[in-house]
Image 1 (cartoon, rainbow, N blue to C red):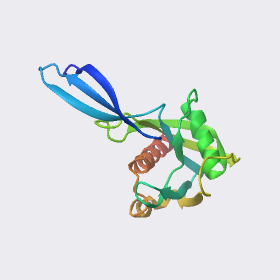
Image 2: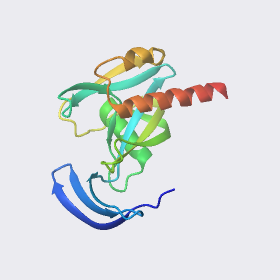
Image 3: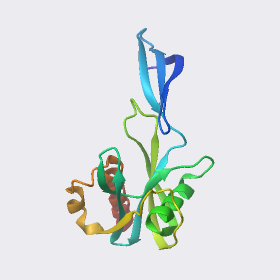
Length: 183
């Protein structure tokens, strides 16, 4: 396995309210030198797959500025400083869906584009839900959409269900539920 490149220099080259871009000057073990840029991230984010019951997923429909349309997906948000991933998942669930979970399982951590983005999202399965809402930072009410777990193919063909993290979480949830059934 190749040796990790040595970082010769780091420079913050751009910063906005939500993004920081860092430039890295790297020396590779074969003598090559390159300059890479990456988006820096804070403590990461969570994406929650809420199961209201054994057959019902809860999705959210909210405006996504990146695609300039309303997207269907799972509740998600930033992990706040000092907050545990599962605590963040339960908080986001309450803020966006109006439920809390008695049972939370970390499915997997995923990255989006690891060559350019430092960010990591923890995918969490939430079960044994009960009504409990919390005030969030959303600019408008989020629509909650119930979806039958047995109709996943129809969900995957929807144009407004396009976020890779949500699709990955859906597959990981289905795999976990199948494993539990086979035990």
